[in-house]
Length: 135
Image (cartoon, rainbow, N blue to C red):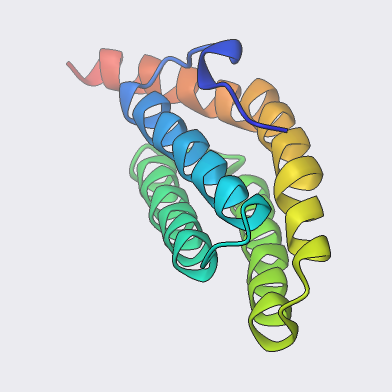
């Protein structure tokens, strides 16, 4: 399932919206590489590295502004990165496309939509309020 970024609500933090849009683009590119039978590993690695960087950016902002639910949000990031890592290792060692394709076509889009509507929405709103108060 291709992710269409504009189908998701924008959040109260521009950096999150920009990084989420880049994520959607990279996810779609990785899916296409897998579906077309091309060299997908560079696309998958790039997507994974983007997630690591994006999650770290969000976590840094949460810590900077003392976001109380930070541990829960970070735990969710860690869980998804662990799943992603396991799929990359399995794909790289076996070459079996099916599990990683299911992960990208089903698991990640479902998770992304839910995560945006719940944890990221609350986090972005909190950051917006804190940054506005600091200005």
